[in-house]
Image (cartoon, rainbow, N blue to C red):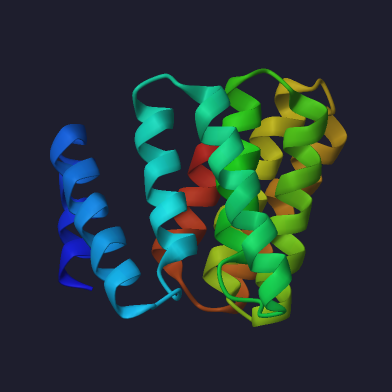
Length: 168
């Protein structure tokens, strides 16, 4: 887990080669031990690196592979974040219809796991994509729902972020 944390820290700092090296080491250790639990997070982090370096097709392919592993596992773990990341990559590719579909899947997955704060963030992402698609009523509905949930969970800073971001 330490190497995975190092990879994510390097990613956040824009040190992509170092992040890739840390992920390579995690993969090597996993192969040696037969551990498969890190396969999805490794692919997801590599996809983030590809996104940050502008290789959107590679990022999309890795996220689709990771999503296939997640679906095969039968576990809800990682589904919301994988659908979110894939939706955001598709948005960057200006594939707004599929992006919107993936973000709806992410919202549904977050609802299944009960992560309300994540649901707020995902609804904001969905609202932005819907706005880019010209679906202004749907965009507003997503953002209003995000604000309502933020208020329900009592997160004032999240409520202000949502409302402030859309001029409510």
